[in-house]
Image (cartoon, rainbow, N blue to C red):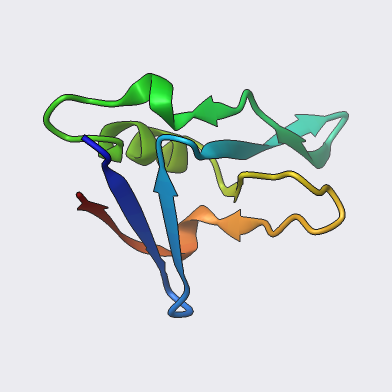
Length: 94
């Protein structure tokens, strides 16, 4: 099965992720009363495929636990960061 997920954002943008996608969660951490952003462990979607629900359970967990994320970051100078609260829906497509 070659499942994909469309991530619909509030600005009308749509991201499509599949088994080759890597999600980079970005967490907010506090140190000495200051808040900093920090990348968490990357999520390689192919490792989290659910037989009935595809990638939706893992994506939902990642987005619920983090405020920001990037997808398939290859060039650190062209990275686009997304806010998880801007996600309107996740749509599994086959």
